[in-house]
Length: 131
Image 1: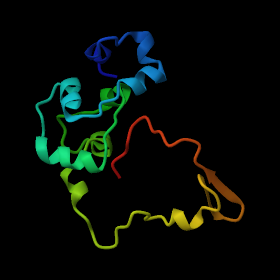
Image 2: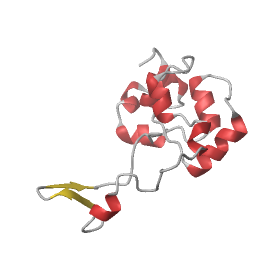
Image 3: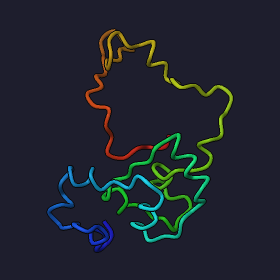
Image 4: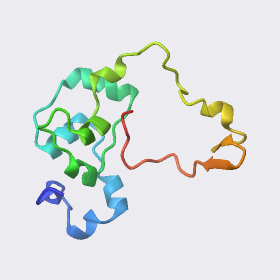
């Protein structure tokens, strides 16, 4: 974590920083919050708002502390910060690219192989990935 990053939050104490509930409550979910927390000028403003209206953004304070916003190809930024290319559709893309809908014998249960299942126990992610 970057030094004193927690101080960018009103109640960013050391104790709160380690509390997962506090992390969820303080996620950046808007461009305004993102630029304020990262202390960077707004990027692509209005167009990125369009991206976020279709694909919401949520990034925990801890994850934000790992980003290198000055590096254009920072892998963590690429994974969670909205990008205009998300609105470009390529041939062959579908809503269910892995075909999971066909492999759901019951809601929230995916069975692709006879001896394995994947139980979806929550629909809540701390940080929304952009892939």
